[in-house]
Image (cartoon, rainbow, N blue to C red; front, side):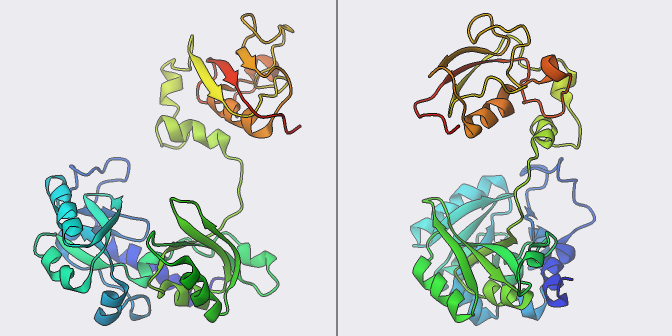
Length: 327
């Protein structure tokens, strides 16, 4: 059972919702130019500052020390000028935020100047760093001390060694740390109180429970086509990749898979129902087979099933790879 203190993390989302907001599949930066649409914040910048419980908010001094802010331009036309102003004054801009907002690091003397030109400047409070779904994936159940497995992302300019030291000072177990060039991230074990403590660390950007991976290829069909549950609009309109050749570069494709196998017994080549050319010949790689299947896999001629077919099930594949099979 999730601790009540962690349930407070959903408060920003609940308090930020506005009744007049458009559904997420209809909103856009021009339809609702002043709206924040984040996982932990759904808010109209014209409303000013959203409220947070004290346990999940920085004081003014703490916010200034941390230095990270959500900056909303108010509309699409002012966004670029505001970003350029921040950069020219020595601040940093990270990711774009829907709609017409950005993540920024602002030196203390720059905050008031940015506020003069922005719709709103909001500190990235601890409550904005905690996924509202934290605790719902059951990762604490497989840990002897009941600690959740949590993915912690740091700000791009954070000192990774300093972040690890801060976590160790909180007695938080670090399972893995990754510096990919695009992001800095740790996987840790933490209880709800430790998650709250972590959220107050200035270098922490966002945390979510590290849910176990599951195969969801059957869901990607509608996600890519319409992002509406089970709405296969493109397929229903006859767009399934007919007469399209997809160039595929990855590990070798396992031709015997039901998603590629030709029931007629035709060899890979011009007469094959799916793979028109490949190099190297033969073998199979789990990753290459998976990506080829996600793109153009079609099991219907083999077993009549369409459940896990790729996005373009009638398309052909032309494949090349340069590494040996893993099988």
